[in-house]
Length: 186
Image 1 (cartoon, rainbow, N blue to C red):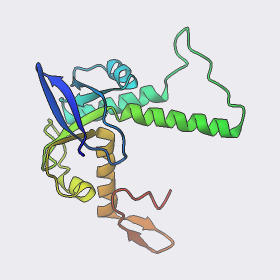
Image 2 (tube, one colour):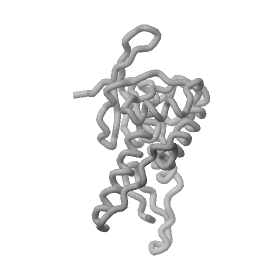
Image 3 (cartoon, one colour):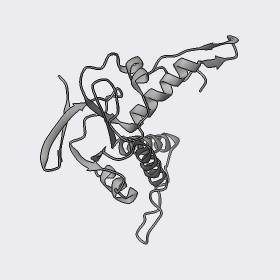
Image 4 (cartoon, rainbow, N blue to C red):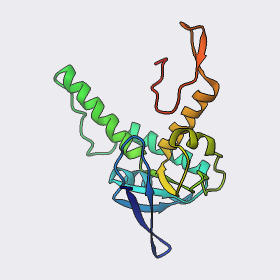
């Protein structure tokens, strides 16, 4: 069954297919965001679990994603009532807290959504042509959908790996991994 997300835009209820290769559940609440949306507001909404469907300039969406990442990386420690960070008692607890923070960061950054047409065209100003990258990652497009900007950037990165290859010194040549393959050099 295809999962759909719903939102209100220009006074009308709209919906679109939700796509997430990582298995991220569809956001329950979606609001429209554009070039006028302040990063602080976007970050607050994303932390609360509200997704932001981008309707502005594509390059500004990338800049907003970077601003959200900066806020996620520097959260806490500011303000008069900021709690002192919890000091883990054991290495296992430290690992768990670190993974929990990474998971929350990933969830927050995945709240910036991008619309796609059925042929993988992104209907935003200054959007790159990602048709080939999306066809390689998802297969043939059949209907419009919405996905996280972070996922799209991963698809583009996977396409570049496949196109340019990754040098493997032990083999003395390059391999050309497909989208979804973990980095062979990390």
